Length: 475
Ligand code: FAD
Ligand code: NAD
Image 1 (cartoon, rainbow, N blue to C red):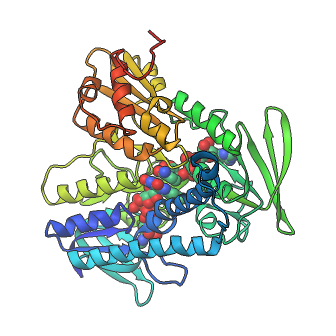
Image 2: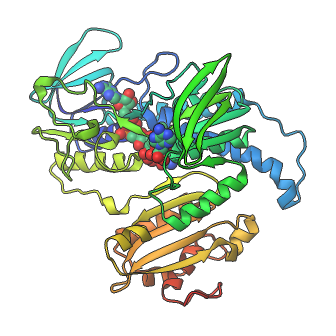
Image 3: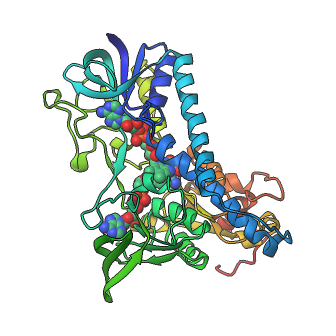
């Protein structure tokens, strides 16, 4: 069989690339080896099946549960009889995932993408060996191949996975009861999101983070605020904690870790290992194909996602850059359009990062620390949600918006938010940066009142020292 394009992987990078290729009139096949719990093939990759979507479904459900319990205190609504049904919550999450993966299969059909369930391996000259879930191995060929095999959790010797007791993120998205004592190795994005889910549902959660700094990639002030708020909520976050060993005895995990004060021992009913992800590139290409990999096993690509092999591209988690669904999807679209002879690019400077805790953390562009490090002169503007009428009405007053702009040109270099709906608010900053906007552009824009978005407006005004709803003490 011969195609214009074959994509290996049907996660948000590969399936979006395949659909865009088909839209552009290219005969396209998409190979993916994911199977659901019943062994049936499903598209969507990590994002839909074991990542973005199931985690956000559980974050939403658990937040609603917690709000029901808090609402009497905050909003004067007394709720009685609210009961937790974890299996039903999991079924609701699974139904959301099922709807979305079915949707992708429908989109494949509607666009004429041939979906092949099985494992793909790149061979020389844009050939792909397909080992289907059912049936015989075949070799198919294309003019172009897009590699989008995604990533998998990193495992550590100190905490090997054990049944449903020591698990990775996939395991922790499928428990049907709330552990009393939950340990999490790694206080990164997954640790915080899944730690929040299970804490809201009643677990005692301890996070052990090897680094001394909390959320090293985030703006320091935002990370400091997050650490304070998460600790207040009851997450026991221990920094500089290096896990040495774990042992499971009679269903209980005994964990030893070391920090500046010495060695400590803790007991947990369940443990999540969330120490990062690595690219799924083992066996992705045969040796004869001579696909070049970088250190860490990432597929080597240039800024256009071209590999060292003519006609072969790679996108998503398996290549350099942040491991984010939207980054992979945009790379998929850009590669498809390049294959079709169009000009396309991805602006890696304007990719938002979001942590879906409560409050949420979101940012785009450079942090203050990075700007200082590069010697860039910048001006910052800050607005606390405590001074926002809408945040007050919602009783979600924690957090702030920070705008960083180039002192000489006023061009926005970074926006950092911690607060309610930060994941939605950050899109406004992304658009402003994509258009090369200045803090003055946002400051001169009329925002609806009362909205959380006004906090971005005020932070932009504050860059010029003219925020209205907060007394300025810093200048
Ligand atoms: P994947 O989604 O991993 O898809 C790759 C697919 O290729 C898989 O189906 C895999 O089985 C298949 N495959 C691999 N090798 C082969 C082969 N040789 N042959 C056939 N098929 C193959 N990102 C966000 O942006 N927002 C979030 O909120 C978010 N939440 C997350 C929560 C969790 C718990 C996790 C684990 C991740 C989360 N992520 C989130 C990250 C996001 O899931 C990834 O960045 C995204 O899925 C990467 O897309 P991808 O297409 O590159 O790879
Ligand atoms: P991460 O890099 O965000 O966090 C891993 C944390 O584990 C780091 O803080 C690291 O210092 C720590 N760590 C590493 N080794 C350790 C050890 N031995 N002991 C203790 N701590 C250790 O990775 P993650 O949370 O596993 O997430 C993986 C990827 O998935 C991320 O790159 C992220 O982009 C993506 N993801 C994104 C979202 C989102 O966009 N909201 C959500 C979940 C996952």
